Image (cartoon, rainbow over all chains, first blue to last red; front, top):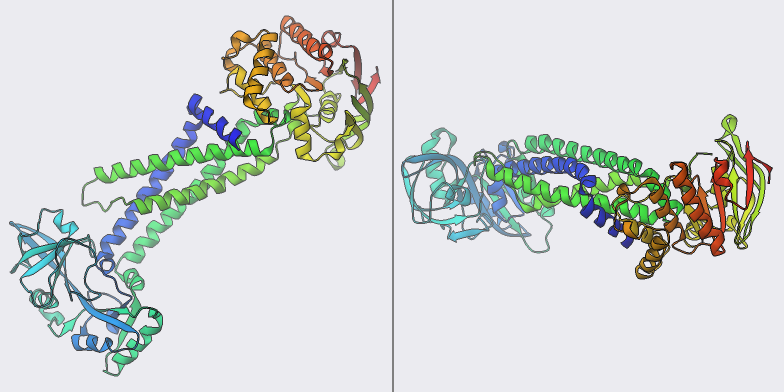
Amino acid sequence: MRLAIRLVWLELRRSPSRLLRSAVTLTVLAALAMVLVSLVDTLDRRSTGVLRAVEADLVVFNVEARQQVLRSRVPRPATIGVGFVDGVHEVGVLSVVPTTVTHEGDQQRAALVGFNARTPAEPVRVLEGRVPTDGEPNIAAIDAALQRTGIEVGDRIILGGSLEVEVVGVVAEAMFLQQPSVWVPPEVWARTGARAFPERGYAEAIVGIGLVEVQVGQNPAEVAPDIVAELAEEDLDVEVVSVREAVASVPGVSAIRATFGGLVVLAIGVVVLVSAGLALLQVDRDRARNAGLRAIGAGTDVLAGALLSRLAVTWALASATGALLATALAAAVPAAVPLAVRPAPLALVAAVLGVAVGAGGAVALHRIRKIDPAEALGESW
Amino acid sequence: MLVADRLHKVVGDGALAVTAVDEVSLQVERGELIAIVGPSGSGKSTLLAMLGALSTPTDGTVRIDGVDLSDLDERGRSELRSRRLGFVLQRPALVPFLTVSENVVLAGQIAGRPKSMASERADQLLTALGLEDRSGHRPAALSGGELQRVALARALLNDPVIVLADEPTANLDAQQGRAVVALLAEHTRGQGRAGVLVTHDESVAAVADRTLRLIDGRLADS
């Protein structure tokens, strides 16, 4: 294997053009896959950031809401009862309503999030300052996406065109349905909602969803039916699902995942085919030379090792350059375009590409094993 | 040193089966260079492939220094080719991005020899073959005759007991061909090795100690 790696290293140094064509082809595909994955990742996170910002095991919806956070209405006293269900550690409430945020005369749309502090509904990552607690109706925390528009801690903003609050903190980006978020106590959500949508029944005694943290060692899936049963005794029909299921139910998320997921799978499939094609071309291009090397005693390990090393170099170049291209593209497009690059999705794409290139290379390995050393001689028989 | 007994080779299957080599027996002694001549398609390369452990006969045996090649598996045949045999091919199959010297040393590395020893031996051979000024060049910069001399150096690097040459002059002009064959003779016969030279050119064969004529897979005379 050392000899094979040394041969590929010398080839790369002295004849880079031999590897360049396949590296460029794979780079284009890698960049495409990385941009697609970053797009779906950004769209997904910007649609579901509020639910991802909290740390809960279960989400309680009223049945009519069909797992939609905006439509869910649960009586606040009922959520208190959830806290007495066996296996439940803590309960919080979280409610969302679309609103506007006005700052220094500029108005933009946002998601207003009412939540209980110091419960599973509190956002986990506070980047600056603090979040408001119950009974603090004149302050708010904003998420990092809203901060990027120029709002800072200490600024005063107007919610829904009439309620002025002071920004006291910034939480990590937690967008909902592509809107940045403002985090306030539940009563502020109720008042703002009632003013904007009087027909929708916003009241301080009503919340959107309950967020439940189960006790250590408890299985959330086993606790969920007990919560449903407990609230049924109070004539309240609820649906209790995991946060993952609640995230998947956010409008548009399943469509985003299906559409872009299909494209990503298609891109990976193309990578497998292209890798196999490129590897086979390399094997065929070098067939006479490999037959000659086999004739003078080179084993399959040397020839296969050289092929695999060449593919590994091509993959590494394509992944690194593809990641750079995707990052540059994300930096170049306007902020409104939902394309933000995170290392984890890029690493995932690179890993999947590696597997795809390996699968493509496996086809060529079979052919390299079939090279007959007698082919090195002048005539076939 | 090299003994082939009743070698028989059928290529293809069923109705397409063709007997490429038919009941060929031969013997090559140390210090002897034999030539195998015959028209295109007469089975010369097929015979050479069996003698050089590149392919297995349908029937018959090949022994090199008493070792029956049919007793060796694929790995064993590879090791035999790299350590005890030297090949000079019609197409030298040199690695294009390696220098002449590195191409020669590569044969030693394939055989598992330490690189320093292989490099030292490569320098000696390239000097002996008049290629000392070309050792740092890539194969693309060399003439056909020079390429075949590099191939000869590579074949000799591991001090093989037998050198097998397949149409080494096919792509050369007459003058270069004569020079290459003379060097081949000098470095096989003259060094106490056995040599087998396959050619369709009678004038090239004239340098050998014996000439075996192959027609339709059978030896015509010797």
